[in-house]
Length: 195
Image (cartoon, rainbow, N blue to C red):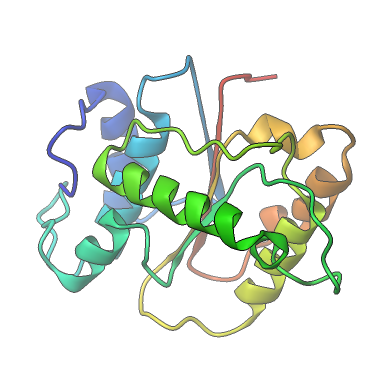
């Protein structure tokens, strides 16, 4: 395991690992439930298990290069999609990170560091009310390129309910690639709001 402080929900973890060990991973998972129960942490831990180079049957080693990168959220195959502040981007395929000011980018990197140290930490940027269409466009572009690292591309969509706020543009853009993702790509949507 990559996190020492993760409290594993044995039923959920058992279901996830069952899909993996039987080689029956679907295109996507939806993890939902109350705030603070560890949905995001379980998703990152599962991404680590899938891409671990020295895993045991149901556990990632926590020591290989892949696990180390997963823990600090810097693995080439891990993509985080979450609400971002709406800024001005020059191109429609620009990542929303390109529109952040230097101080906003510094704050974002600090929050990623906090998340890597504490899997229960919630990334929350000021004025981040929705998942932006540029986040989805940038993701789609990235997925069409060949992977830098071996293994599965894991896309974690945090606060997935915000794909539909204030409108469904981001959700509609995601739909096609969610239904027919490239090989060895897994989407994990995480939300407090099941509906």
